[in-house]
Image 1 (cartoon, one colour):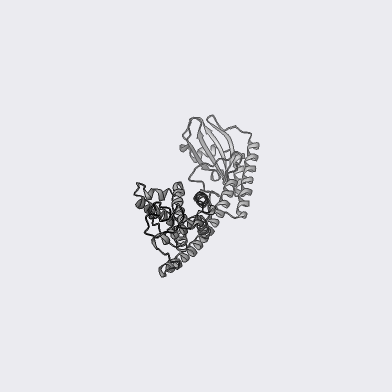
Image 2 (cartoon, helix red, strand yellow; image 1 turned 135 degrees about the vertical axis):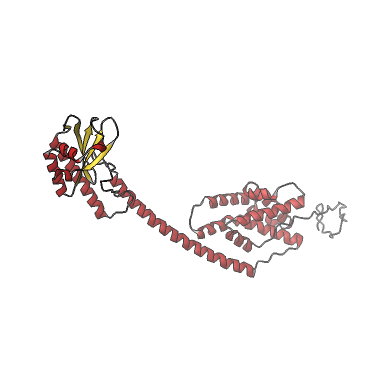
Length: 353
């Protein structure tokens, strides 16, 4: 022990310096911090993906609370470590600095270490990666400042409390390491498998969406009425199709549009059939040519009979229906009442034979 006034070396039990007569202050004991080797600290932090750091802060703040008999909440300070890590680092490094002046060097500045730790933790939290290996690497880098502080804590504990930390790994640690390495490997392989499946699904969805965009392109005057008698075709609408099928679909749509335009130009619409019935339009859909008749309250569309249809169909329309049939094009008639939304559909070929 050294006298702080005249720097004479005194015995441990001396209360007064026999050279200058000054009182020798009683040395206060230091805090017994949490002891762990830096190798084990690093390993436990990696396998818990950083959760061990919360435990580390909790144990050290608990030691501070016990020594100072303060009212701090160790768990709260551990959870919000980045807000108060500087004060813990300062205590630990100051304890080590009293024993060896190297811990007072600017390299071991509590403020510098705290800032480094906060920045590295924020970078670690912001990284968006699916690689388990990269996550472990970034976690190891982020706790580097804590390893420096832990070395200071171990030094203080060793000199003040004769607690020597062993650096070797135990058998249990080795077993845990093997299982964790296996977990990393299986997790990474599973991630590759899931990514491959997602790539396949995304590719299929992109192909379907591309086909849907083609099918959603407007066809001039296209009306697809709902009718049980007409073949129900949902094409393509979510069903994957080959490029050749897509080409056939576009070719058929263009053909239907041309046929509907040709018939409309030939009939000179609107065309009055009788006092209550008017042929108002001819439209194309991907599966049929539709003749639209409008009724002015004479009959309900569902009450129309085959005889009525024959009367509505003029010879030139019947000839067109037969010509369409030779081209494998379905022809139908739609009857609607002008003042309502009631509609009915009827195939035309059988009434033109």
